[in-house]
Length: 272
Image 1 (cartoon, rainbow, N blue to C red):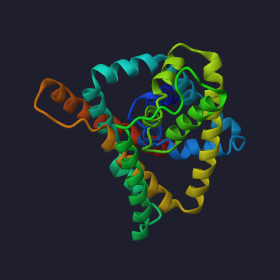
Image 2: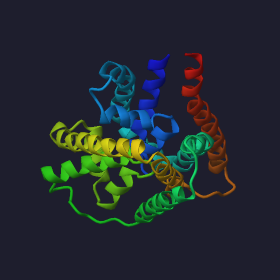
Image 3: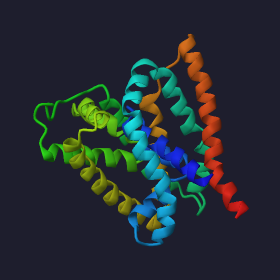
Image 4: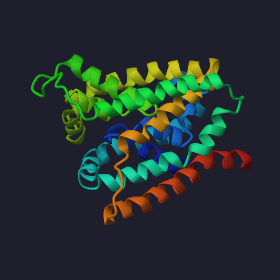
């Protein structure tokens, strides 16, 4: 059962890596995986067997999810963006009570609001960039350095809650190129992108893990700012029609699902 849960969570995280406006880091926070993932990546050889047992189903689900959903996600966001966005907003909101409780587990200080406000503003800034695009590297001239940078961007958006790698790739005019390369399994393109992704994940995971250990409260509130801010760029507005009504139903379902998943780990610990 635990393997299946991890696999399904990996599938969900893969959606965050490729879906426009969705942050893989935010989904990791939603599923209660964020701290443990950064810990496992930052200290790969510490408790290696335990980390491998925990991380393998998530990584397997994530890898398969990226391959399966690269075309599907593009289709869904192109044709059912309202419904899908409401679902993701519900997933995010459903975890807020447990997120704030976790952030305050060692106490609360008003100074924690400083990193919270900063990261919230940063996320809003990236949301504003969504409607602006610059063509840094035209599709006919993709060098290895460009590909490595795209991988670093995907890793950054995956490990930092609230930051959508897809938005950044769209901003520099590379999203369609990258998602097309993933969908077609273009290995000469994917290998340098994957290299940049892995390097970025390791670097940021070590940094965030250090911050969690040294300044727990400040880091948690910074993550909260990113996570709450991630709602802003994907909110599709509301009008009275069938699509928004279905979206509202999916929003409620998303809240119920994330509430269940965010409490799953706590229930398992009580059973142990």
